[in-house]
Image 1 (cartoon, one colour):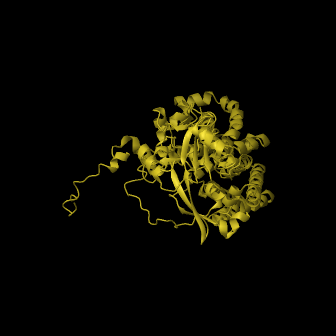
Image 2 (cartoon, helix red, strand yellow; image 1 turned 120 degrees about the vertical axis):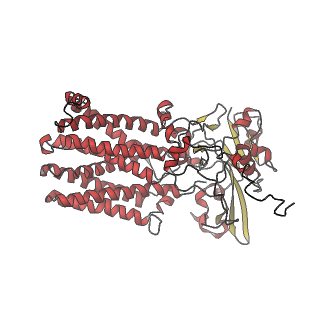
Image 3 (cartoon, one colour; image 1 turned 60 degrees about the vertical axis):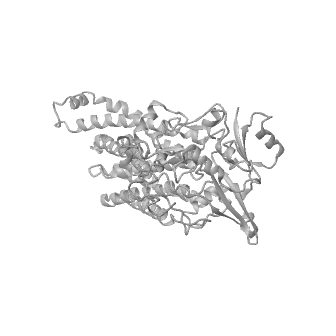
Length: 315
Length: 252
């Protein structure tokens, strides 16, 4: 813009109070990352169960909800911890404001976690018939074993909005031009598929080659499209001056340039090639390595994407 | 009724009286501001000018903070004011992410979101906001923008074409207007912020002020610990006994 480039109109802030820095920091990054794993394992697990017989993945029935449960609780813990008034979280249920994606998301995530807990309990006691043979809870869980299969379709259906609602929170954050709903929604979905496939890779030791090949396929597709989405944003987000100014933090010389590219290489590029090579020749160690890198890279990229719009002065 | 604000930047002389009055009236803690006046120097020597821009909540008709608040702590009053109920706020900071004007802050003493309310408590009693009363040049004009006969409506009519709002592209319909503003003063991306460069350097903050519940564990422990010294009055009742009196130090 020419009016900013000529000396006569150069404008410099000479007195202002300190502006708040990053408000949503690592706890929110961890929250989003953990939720990607928590919902992703369900989505990818459902895909595998659709493609393969249960017998090919013997531990999936109980390990899938267990992983989901653990990561959903990490997500909920850090959601709560990030609140400045954590005990007032109850107000979301007592005084809900339904135009807020935070409210809708909190309700859905709570319901989702409840159903996952139920699946985990049933799945665990079914898979371990010797554990607490006479316990009331174990007995009830085994008696209602069929409930698992009945609620599973609803859980898979619910996993989609639980994955995506954070994108709507970010889109409702209208001060942050970089977080646009269409791209954020897609990024969240790819992140869930990436994290879900990476999470399941760690329990796929005893699975059939074909099912592990499908895991590698999902990981390869998710890393490829995640990378493409970020590159699209990186190079072509020039529709708004705010988005452009935000991206300066990740472009060459920017404060977050190194972390961003570390995330891209570790999270997407290397795991993509490792996953593709694994589809040709099954190598469990390499696949696990790809999964670890993908999870680390995903965290770094999410962290950068969360923080950079908060660096921009709003007033 | 739709209450609105207009600042005539041609009149504002940057005395910061409004800033101070706001702090006193609303007991805004140190390191936080509901209203602040920003100085911007435009041009290069010798053709330079300094502009002063008071910045506060815009009380948008389509407020993103109200929309994103999960518990309706941010809510509309009948007169159009976007008010905050700090007793309900959960401190998620969603409103801080949503407000395109950076007008909301996290109160370090209550750990809840806070912002300018156009002094809603004073308006309820038939008084003007503190910043309006204190302005020595009447640069702050406040009133009902729905009433064609109000001072603010007539001022807007008189200055048609020169009335601006901040970031109209956000479609928030702000009820805070400026006369005499320009791109450099109203667009935060049109001016530079040089790190560490300020008219007054070395601004320090008192150690005991700030977020006393900043640590994660502290947030959970806060309800069980005493808060008696964490309100604004704590600045007034510091312990004199521990020190020598003013007279003993040789003062008058």
